Amino acid sequence: MRGENFSYSYPGLAKGNDLAGNRIAQSRAGVSEGHMIALSSNRLLSVSGGVAPRSISYDSAGNAANDNRGPGANYAYAYSAAGDLSTLTRDGPLWLSQRSGAGRVAPAARAKVEAGSPAHGIGRR
Image (cartoon, rainbow, N blue to C red; front, side):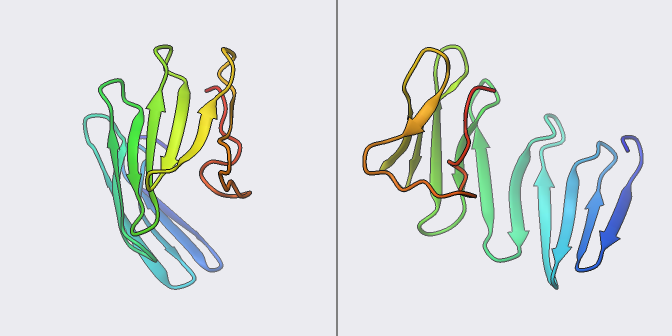
């Protein structure tokens, strides 16, 4: 619902959105978060409160370049000239790398990629 502030809730979950439809607040099971959005781009910049604070930075093309979710969870993303995700690292070690010109990515050697992790299911956008 663009163009109006709104909020909605379900048992154990409540969310609030701004005029552009961006989530700016969320409460789940009594844990509240605030979401800071860049006004010029509608990109998520940070999440405060909740289990762990989070900050996200972007490259000049608008792709997520870094997603810091606290100690042991700092993700860095690199992209090909075509704008496809080419590598994903977590706290330094390589997690994913592109393996073909089709934009597919695969777990890097000895990488631990679990279902539900940010690395799981990444592919061509």
